[in-house]
Length: 106
Image 1: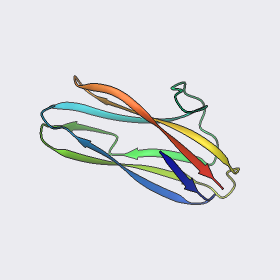
Image 2: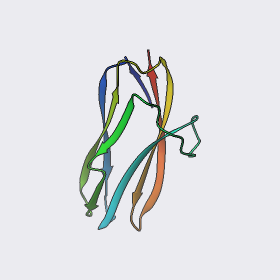
Image 3: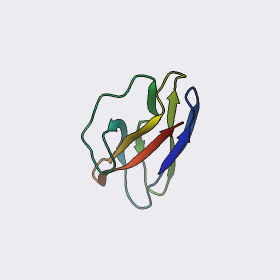
């Protein structure tokens, strides 16, 4: 995924979980900055880039759809650059994994 933003802008992205037959189980999302795509080594979040998942921990039950929101905020002084985020998700007893997101600030 790629997100284009301007410094000082806020964007929201829906994270959808469809449980099908799986559950019940605890679901946890965690987001952190990484050096590049396909890295899961956490680095310190650059100042001026704030990222959080709203509804980051919840109980999930079978045959339901859950939507969490990834909120990305940049302040007006954030340098123009490409920043990489890793969104980790864990569904207790079912799966653990993640995905990468590129945030292009221009």
